[in-house]
Image (tube, rainbow over all chains, first blue to last red; front, side, top):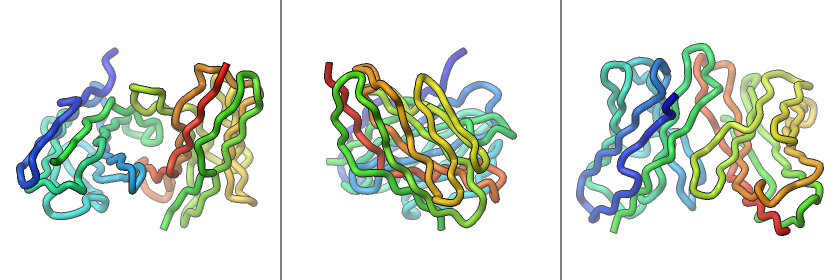
Length: 114
Length: 114
């Protein structure tokens, strides 16, 4: 079946603009995670969704970052007033409930803030 | 808090050489341990896992044993191939939580030459 998909694959934006990144998890996966992969910080957890709720937002780096999930499926990560330090690859992963450690990752969105 | 430390790379080997990538961890709970691999141009993939002490995870000729006494989960392969060239990430998930929030090491770049 289809894996986790993310769009766009690449995004170049100007400093100060808002961006939206989309994640389509594997059908039936109730858990969804966002991570960020950057040169300086490695791979960092951002937020976890179970269904449409986000019980763990502890990794979001600032209040410019927000995420939502609708219908227990698609998730959108929004970054407002982008800064150069936001440049990174944003990864989405999903898993079945009860098999939370078997996460399937999408290909990522490479965000470049100029 | 939780943390993962990987041996620094990059690692360059000739085909058929023996591979070890060291990984040690610090965790407040009783974690599950993983190795993920990222092949060039592809997304993160789960390579192997171990969920309790002395478990050995294995896949594609790679092995890693969960050593609680040394808090380690070193990745090994007896004979590497050019196709093993990739970035390898050690990770943990604290089973004290009900979900699989992953903490990653910095990643080790492996290049295998013919």
